[in-house]
Amino acid sequence: MSAHQTEIRDFEDLFVYGLEAVYDMELKLVDALDEMSETATNDNLSKGFAVHRTETETQVQSVEAAFEALGREPTRRDNRIVDGLLAEREQFDASVTGDTLLNTYYLNAAMKTERLEISSYEELLMTAEKANLGADVTEPLRGNLEQESKTLRKLQALAGGADRRTLWSRLTGT
Ligand SMILES: [Fe+2]
Image (tube, rainbow, N blue to C red; front, top):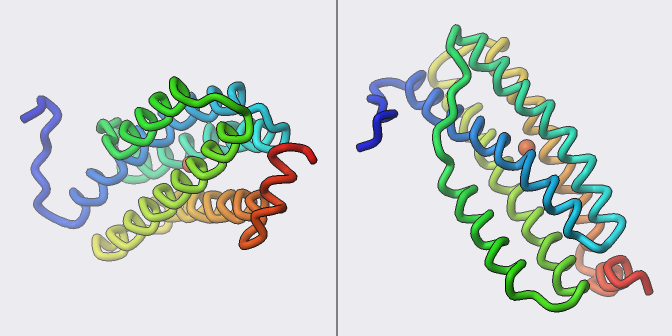
């Protein structure tokens, strides 16, 4: 049992438990997006990661605003799902040879991460409703959810949807 172990007795406790993991997730993603922006060799991807890094810094502040609206100090709880995604990427980085493979993996990893973020915010908002939390708590999180959804749509457009040739040409510049 870690020193940080908290007892979850009601929906507000459950909400805070989730919020702490989301706070850790966003903070870890600020650094990860920086690295991905530098490592990706495709311009569209690299710029996209840089833009989303700046957005993610704002998302960190929105999560802090939710903590503050609850009268709590922003606290991180190790998000092991994000740790797993980041460990997967490190392993990939050490193994890949070739730009197209690298960019393709990064685009897919980014979409996977957005889906995780979307799912995490949806879960938080559902729990907030059960805990009867106010708009001052939920609105900043709803804003983040909208931003993540928009980012996923942009990444999907970059992937060209069902048309994999679009993905190929964007990643190889041909
Ligand atoms: Fe995010």
